[in-house]
Image (tube, rainbow, N blue to C red):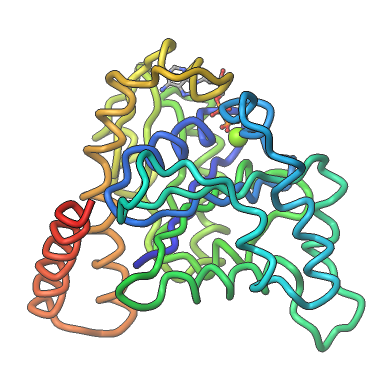
Length: 284
Ligand SMILES: Nc1ncnc2c1ncn2[C@@H]1O[C@H](COP(=O)(O)OP(=O)(O)O)[C@@H](O)[C@H]1O
Ligand SMILES: [Mg+2]
């Protein structure tokens, strides 16, 4: 299983909507964790009709202080699984309720202790282990804000940088990418949202990174994913479903590079993933 970070350099290109679209169409067990240090949007947006009783990363801050992060995580998740008994469990960890809370996760009282973001990154990595583990999609928001969850990015199998294919977004991404490359170990892919003057090939060559997904401009579906509602089908969701295979290929490529395995091992890993996905589909 895999830890996938979705983030942007600047502005608001559609990180949260794209992360939700990936989550709602993902074909394996998945946890969407809102780790945006500027605060979460899902509780007041997509989940606004669901009584959350303050569940989320903000409440998990208390567990962090008590050293009970792993135990309390499960009480803070919102279950979006479509039907009972399905193997494709979909869980959401709503984000911080105000940006000031990010400091709790980024700083530490004792220099020998890991920070909250470091502990959360470790916890996400442990969730993905094993055959029945969870993939984790972490919405890390904009990188150009205070207290960014860099340890979560550093631990990710893949970082997806979301941008609009226009000059301001490409410029901001070009500035963000070199330090990002120095901070992360996994590969970085681009996720383009909406139409713009630049095509995927131009974005890839300007930013020296592969385009992993192209998400169409779909104001109807985006409005539901941002503001709530039941009917979120359409082009945006189809594109997200289509992106899963490319994201998992990048995960496999990154792992092969990290482990120094041969290309043969990669393709057999992909075969296992396909078999695993089929198993999950059959079980649901
Ligand atoms: N694929 C899309 N098509 C149309 N509008 C979108 C799309 N993705 C996002 N949006 C809109 O863009 C705005 C910002 O989206 P959001 O996901 O909150 O951005 P971010 O998380 O990067 O700040 C919202 O109004 C959202 O509805
Ligand atoms: Mg967001």
